[in-house]
Length: 407
Image 1 (cartoon, helix red, strand yellow):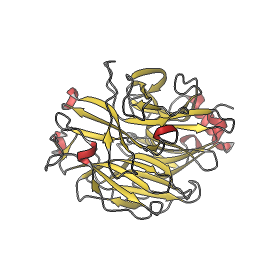
Image 2 (cartoon, helix red, strand yellow):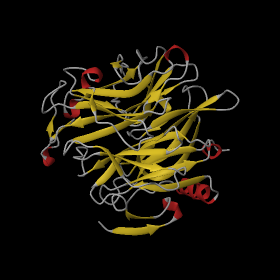
Image 3 (tube, helix red, strand yellow):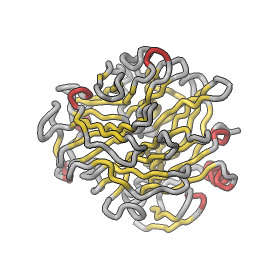
Image 4 (tube, one colour):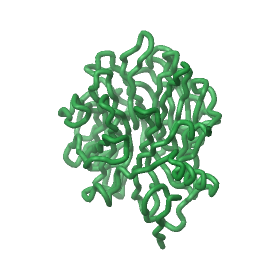
């Protein structure tokens, strides 16, 4: 395939090697993004790229972004040693102490030899401790068989050489050092017929309102079956004692016939929870009024489009007591590639999503959204995945709230 080297503000910061048939998106949306960059409403910085920060890695994927108690930005990802979901690599972290303008050297936070570590799901507790839950797949076994890579299908259960397990690491110094991993599989994964469970991907949260204040909520899903017959179910993994012990909730039932899996959650202003789940076409939403222990039916949200990729959601509290939900995601497919990174806003706790702003019109996949200490919005997203082979940039996006809301 022929390639074209393009270096332009339209491509959101820096030179990138693109396939000439790569989806670039709507020309009007591209122009709007360029205008926002020129007006200093929007900025982008590459955080993970194999050519700049990871010579020992084939790729970086699955971003998660949190703000540490000291205000540092912590960007987590899978450090993939091979071009596969079966990464054979560690979980990695980069830190910014200046609001995302610059990023410190790559840091390995946990590794298990050549096993595959997936789905870093971080959360910052009120006292500053940071927890990261993640999945470990034994070398050469994964959540689906990858025959051309010699990867077999995991067994169900909690222990065994072919079994996927869940682990937890902690930091008490804003992510500079990390504990040894603790196996929490028995508390966080159902037994057979469940084959594998997943957290996130993307951040977890701590509830702050009502009787469940202080409860840690880790968005989760699992599945039974193999290949195209896999059945996914979403639920919450939660702790009421700062992560010392864990429980799992009931499933959010899904009778839509639409496959829905990778899960994020947000606490609403009334103390209820909203589940926001990946599903090709439109996001699937469910709600809980008991701290995530039980859930309503998952239903498609017709005004919240989804290309079929992980997305994330936060609640943004305003000085007047009102709040806005902000969802970041990949919203369409162009040339059969997930594309069009956008933020959608809800002003009624998720009932409707009338406002949106595109921040990348071309190829775009997973993203993680946070509120920054100064009130701006930060997004850690996968740009141009699938363009020029399977390499992509994970970039940090900083945007003004008013621009995202079209003001």
